[in-house]
Each structure stands twice: as structure tokens, then as C-alpha cells.
Image 1 (spheres, helix red, strand yellow):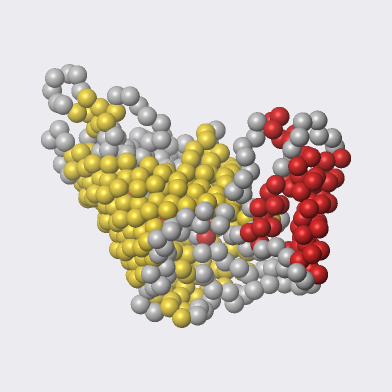
Image 2 (tube, one colour):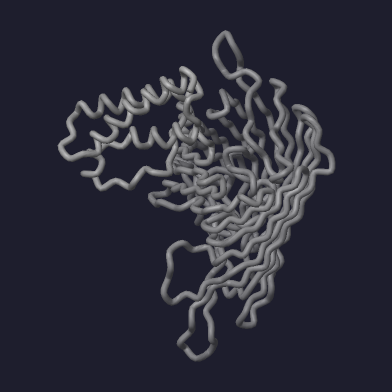
Length: 476
């Protein structure tokens, strides 16, 4: 036996004494001191190679047991490992790397001014002398708080609540099996796959709100199951989704949808990329049973709505009236994007075809947008081909007087949406946006959008004018 082994055997003998004593009734605070010393001895033994890492973890768990915890009826800590923390964006990770927990959240503070030809008689209402809108407004656009993590290297989970409009909504409550990566399966409150802007987090979009055409026809966060395969330059998704309501209504038969999306990056090298994708969905509407004897079902109204480019002033120029008596509908979307260094451009085309009951005519609605952006400070948008969306923008130099300006981006977008068809007066709108974004760092951004719009209803009522909006956003 060498000297290290002999020394280790002696220390282990001494170590087991306080461990045994601390487990006996009547243990005193001195036992806590003994436990701390035992932990230090274990580290010495590990460094000198007397014990293995597995032996160190097993003995450390024994040393860390505090008899006072039994009074709190705590779960047994056997099987858990020491952790490391990351303070700025708080994260806890197990020493073996198999488990991760972190908090996440965001706050968006918006303000806007509306300058229409007539703020008192807008297409927000199709009746004459109706549609009054305020001149100025402010809002907490998003205030989200949640947590996410990884368990046993196999399961990714997230729970996030959105505090908005005097309500609390779930925006992500799911568990995802990732052991078969690049193949993944997700179950819970998730996004129905569709489009580049929708599949990109709002934290990463270029403008304060998504384009009018996409915002009007996008799906929602629904309860469902989604399978995904991530290749190096492509992404394929297929989903089975429910009717979209988290809170049950006892007399409603829930709807469902089949949805899918496939994206492909023909060229992706450095800061140059191309992106192509298509997506589609078929949805059967939810309904209640009728009792008047005329028809079997009363279908729930469908909301295909978009605002004027800001929520600080709640002008609903598209889809102010819900679509009635819809049996089912299909949604198709085509998208393309291109990036070359600091410059990028993208666009999407969306169509919705709705089948209606009770002798009403079917509807065909749709729209498109195209946008471009340029970083004056030289950064590039972070395109992720394996997910088919955009990631976080990291400035070359964070904002700090005398050190760096942060990242500055200028952008322009045009969107057209047409929800007028047959007898449905959903409105149509041309929407122009100029924007400037100042990324102080990865977590903080200031946004300013100038918008000009022209909107019209079937009865000929029109609204035109400008909107100026600003946002301060922080994420953590």
C-alpha cells in the first residue's frame, strides 16, 4: 500500500465517524461543522486520486445530509448532483451536465400616436360616424415570466405565463423528448407550425408587430403534439393540434387541425444564407349542438384579425367582424429569405380558404409582405437553418460610452392583406413600415416604427394616415 492509499484510508475512517454521528438522534449544530470538514476532506482525496469521481459524489451526498431536513419532510436527495450557476441570465446546471434549470422572461413597453385623416370615423367600425380611436396610447405589450430546463439529458420542458390585457395566458407549457435528436417530439401548449415570422420568436422579429398579412391569418398557441426533424440545412415539422382554447367549455366539441412545415436552406455559409419554406394546415372548426331543430351544429365564430401595427392604440382595421358559420378551412403559406452580410430580405405569401355552412358562400382571403433590413454597424441576422427561423442578434460591441455603440439596424416593410370576399366584410389594407432598431446588447433593444396605412371596407368606408410607435424591450 502506498502512502497516498494509507493516508486516504485513515481519512476515510475519520470521515465516516461524523457521518455516522450526524445520523443519530440528538445531533447538535457541531455535526454541521463536521459535515463541512468532511466535504473538504473528500475534495482532497479526489484531487490526490485516492477516490473516484463516483465515490466522491456518493460520499458527498451522505456528507450533505442534514438531519434537520427530515423535519421539513423533504424529498430524499439521493441521485442528485452538485450544481453550477450562471448569474447574469440565471441558470443552474448539474455538475454532470444532465440537468438544467433557468428562469426566463421579457418586458415590452410600447407607446404610440395615431394621425389619421379622421380618428373619429375609422374602418374599425363599418357604420358611418363610428370607429372612434384615441390619439395616443401606452401599453405593456408583453410581460412574460417562466422557467425551462432539461431533465436527464432526455426531456426539455418549458412553462411561461404572459401577463397582458388584465389576463394571464399560457404561451408555452410543454415537454419535449430530445433523446432521439435530431428527431424530437413535443407535447403541450405549442405553436402550430407556419411561416418564418411566426416560427421566429417575437424577441427576434425586425418590427414591433408581425406583418399585417401574417398577423391576420397566423394560427395560435394550441394544445397539441408536434414531431420535428432537424437537419443541418433543413427542418421538417408535422403537428396534430386541438381547437386552441386552454379553458374548457362543457358544451363545445373541440376542433382540431393537421399542420406541417418544411424549410430548406440551399446555401448557407458564414453570413450569407438563403431560405425557402412552405407550410399548410387543415382545420375543422369547433361547434356546439343546436336545439332549434333546424341544424345539428352551431359553429364557433373565427377571428382573423390584425391591428394597425401597434397594440398601444387598438385599431382593428382587418377582421373587426368574425367569420360566422365556418365548417373547416385550409391555410397555405410560402416563404423565402436571403441574407448577405449586413443586408437581408424576406417575404411570405398566405392564403386562407374557408368552407361555410347554412347556405353561405365559401371565402378566399389572403395577403403577403416583403421586408428588407440593413445593419449600419456591420452585424448580420442570425439565421438558423436547422430550425428554419431567426435567432438572437449579438452586437459586435455592446453599448457603453467610450467602448461601443451597440448594433443599429434600419428596415422597411410593405404588407397587403385582403379579407373582403363575397358577403364577408373583413376589410383590406396596404401597410408601409419604416423602422430603426438599437440593440444595446443581446438582452435590451429600443425600437421605433413609422407606419403609413390605407384601409377600406366593402361599403366604401376608408381610413388613411400615419402611426408612430416606439418600444423598450428587455429579456432575461
